[in-house]
Length: 127
Image (cartoon, rainbow, N blue to C red; front, side, top):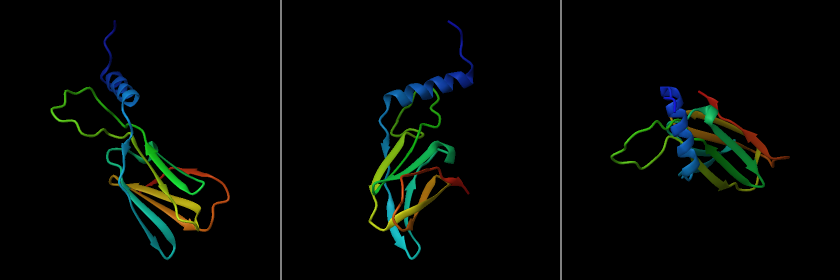
C-alpha cells in the first residue's frame, strides 16, 4: 500500500463523505420585487463552480456538492462543507430567465417575470 499525498488524502476523504452523506436541507427566503422573484439561501464553504440551479415545471432546485472534507477527528460535527440541496415551488408567472450569484456564502437567485419556454439549468456568477 502506498502513502497518499495530502491532496489525495483530502480528495479521498471528500469522496467518502459524499458517498455516505445525505444532502443538507437549506433554509430560504423568497420575496417579490417589481422586476423579479428573488430567492436567497445560505451556502457556506462552496464556490459558484460547485452550485447548480434548475428550473423545471414550476420547481426551482439548487444544490452544491461537497467542497472539501479533509480527514479529521471532530469533537462536534453538525454540518459538512457542501452537500446542500433544496427544491422550492415557484409561483406562476416567473421563470422566463434565471440569474444567480454567490457572494460570501449567500446564494441569490432572481427569476424574471414570464413563463419559461423550456427547462433552465445554470450556475451562479461570482461577485
